[in-house]
Image 1: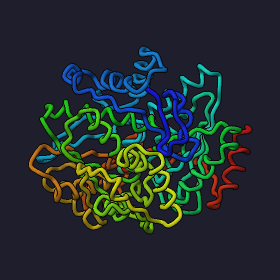
Image 2: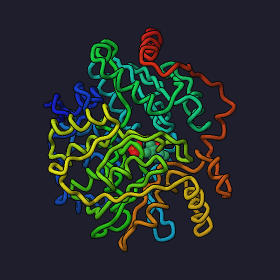
Image 3: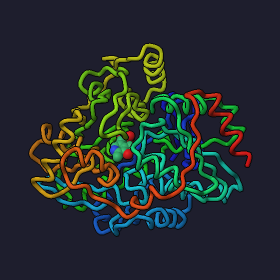
Image 4: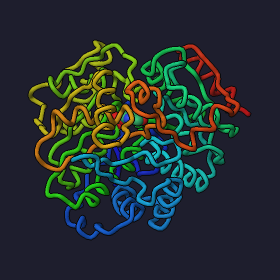
Length: 456
Ligand SMILES: *Cc1c(COP(=O)(O)O)cnc(C)c1O
């Protein structure tokens, strides 16, 4: 399988080359040349463990890592999860909930980042190279990325987060990590400021090469690929229905895009219910075809407080007939004018996406209602999905993706009037020493910081 950029300027990359490039050199996102259909093999995977399924699915997209090595990387990645199923499915009322939070930082991003960390380590060892990972987080990516590479040789990691805007627990999960290769950077600005500084740093190709920058944000194709697996896994666990609906709490469009890939591969997902919080750029896009930036609002589901969804570009690429030119024009217009519309003549109507938004009040009410009815405690991100799903679902089986453990967001759980749940891995954090550096939202300051700290 080869990879190319959504903007047409890069092509012919192998999987490992695509992983190492992160964001494509032309500013686009890397996508596979084709999406393999696996309908024929699906029956033979019914009894596979999570690791076996992951190896089988991901090997369709990876031909430059030997099969035994891939299988070992998968094993290493998921050994840190606290459930034998890795991503178990539980029944909550008449909804199947896919719990994606059994990894080391208790959020779904561990599923991809534990694997990405293992891939990086193997490639760098093989090629005798070192990298500086630079990432931005609205909360959960940072700690999950850090957990994926802490203490690994040949890797430094720099994580930017909007200073004071992540939850206290999320910040502690990053700043209490004491490994010397981990650098936390609080940015005085919003998450979108962090993302735009990140994009700017990576688009300085000379700087990127000179300092061997690598990406862990969901622009990295490996993240999407690792997430494709659990859509299949869940389908087996709910009894291989002829069709099912999936509701995904969405921010950067990474998780739900992985579901879209699974559907293109033959998984019988009848439709997606895309759920956003009050930051509803994607809900507006899917209901009007217009992609327009709004003001970022702080909500109870901070990992979804996003007004520019970087992974949407991959979907646009497929929607616009795999034309790099069309994507380039659309993104240029969006950057220059703050909004862009899918041109009618290139819009290949795809009605598999339905969408809705939940405000803070609905989020808390859903946490309370679901607890009262079933005794199950939802984290606020999953509550956004539950709320939207309840008004958009059809008659068939419904799978809701649960993206975080409720212990990570105890403030919202408390506000909802539901007993707060704890988790042993979080209980110790407030007693540990912390490390971070605070910088203004400025790309040159970030570059200086990287140069200084990577020299040690
Ligand atoms: C990152 C995150 C999301 C949003 O996922 P995207 O891939 O950005 O759409 C939702 N919930 C939680 C808990 C997250 O950490």
